Structures are given as structure tokens and as C-alpha cells.
Length: 374
Ligand code: CA
Image 1: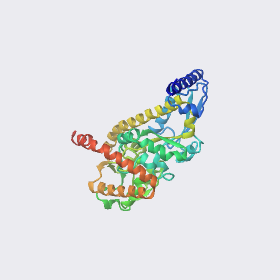
Image 2: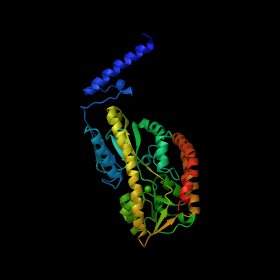
Image 3: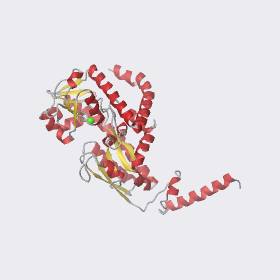
Image 4: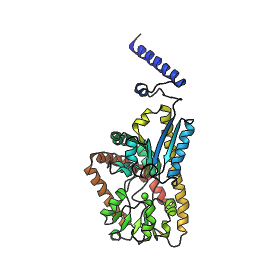
């Protein structure tokens, strides 16, 4: 018997043993067996009960609802072998402590967005949204097909974490302003609630970004503590009542052009799952990714119509001068970030290269079409 035949016979014996054990639910979870990616490891006898914290209040429209759906899908697909208990922000840990809690295994998962972890990992915002960045469809393409996921895995690995796309808010609005923004000078000294890199861009353009939690935006805007705020899009902005406390509703949302929502998973715990539950979890995650974006797109359309009907509100486009200035400030902000952090530099380079490739096609396709469709 030649070497190839011996190797093949050995493989068949091994594969046969694993399938037989899997069928009786007795397959052992050894790292050696799990490395054979073509041989499923299934254990019907063991149940998994995971905890998932979220950055959102309990039952928050779309994102909170989507998390609940994800747990139901996982439970159904796994025949009840995997149950995920969802905790809203503050129920188990504070809203923005998911990174540490998942990293050290206190909880198995967190639903939020990578840019919340910028303080721990400067490159994290590239996996959510950067100012003047890619839209939701382009982010999906980068992460799924353009090498984005491998980079994301690489930068999260030192933290024992893996991030997966699990929703997207779609294109956001530019925000609510108590005064008109006609020139770049109108941004000077503007006190605006705008977090993350968007805030840094505003500061570079002369404004004053302020950190205000979702629950305090309405009163701060009403009392003049804030001159302006961004939130999400027409649906959530309307639910927060922002149309009652500001007159000018500006577009487009240059700072969040298609933010990816993230399911953050403890890597070690994920690796311990039987292979079918791993696939079930990732499949439910993809389905949530699709469901949340679809909901945002639809509800934003419905609620934009409602906001248009509010007489005190005028919906306006940022003038070209303002957009040009913000775009320059955005590029400087991202260049600075890359210059000061080697990981960000690597991710920024890959992000830009990918964008260049797909933009050339969008330039002659969708862009022209949208400009001329009406
Ligand atoms: Ca926002």
C-alpha cells in the first residue's frame, strides 16, 4: 500500500469513529478533533446557557428587538440546546463595559458597536463607521468579501475576542440644530452632542463636541446646554422627541454613513462550542445583520414622512462649503489616527484600498443612477 492509500485509510477510520460517536452524542470535545474542519463535532447532550449584555436599553427599538430575535432563532435552530439570556444596558454591567466583560469571560457576548471600544483599541471605529466612510452595503462587502473580517479577527485576537457584524443602522441623519448652518463659521463654538471620531472632526472644524447620553439629549437641547445633537435617523430621532426641541434637521449624516452593529463574542467560549452551535450562532448573527438594516431603512422612511409633517421643523441639506470643510477635517483626523497607531494605520490602509476598488464601479453605477432617477 502506498503512502497516499495509508493516509486515506487512516483518515476514513478516524472520520468513521467521530461520526459514530457524534451520532450517539458521545463525541468528546478535544482540540485535535475540532481542528478537522470537515468533520462536524456535535454533542446533543450538553446544553449551553450564555449571557449577552447589550449597549442598548432593554427592548430598545430595532437593536434591542433584534437581540431578542437572535436569541429566539438560536434557541429554535439548536432545538433548545443553546439559550442566550439578554441583559439591557445597566442590568448586569454598565452600557459601555461590554468589551472587558466579554474579554474576561464574565459574559459570553455583548451587542453594541466596535467604535465604543476606541479607548481600548484605537482602530476599532473602522469596524463600525468613520466620518465620510463607507455605507452599509460597502461595509458588508468589505467585512464579508474584502478581507475586513480577517483584519477584525486579527486586531481582536489579543483580547480573546471576536467581532461579527450583527446589524447596521444604515445611513444616519446629520442631526438637529437650533440655528442654521450656512457656512463653516457657523460651526464655530457650536456645542453639539456628537461622540467618537465625528466629535473630533467637529472640534477640528471649530465646534465643541459634548458627551451626552441618549437619555439626557432632549433636556439638554431644550435648555440650551446643547446647540445641536446627532442621534440616529428619523425613526429613533422622532421617538426621542427631538422634533419638539430643535428647528433644523440637517442631512446627510457625514459622520455615520452606515455604522455596523457588533456581536462581540468571547473567543475561547466560542471555540468550546460544538461545531453546529457555532454555525447556528453565526447564522443567526447574519440574519440579525440583515433584519436590523431592513428595519432601519423601512422605519426611517415612514418616520421621515411624519417629521416632514411637523410645521416647526425644516429639513435642510448641509451647504457644499460646510461638507467640503468637514471632509477635509475628517481626512486630517483619520490621517492623524493612523500616524499615531500602527494597528490603525494597517486597518486604514486596507479600508482605503478596498474602498478604491469598489468605488470605481459605484461611481459609474449607483451614483449616476441616484442622481438621475427622479
Ligand atoms: Ca449617531
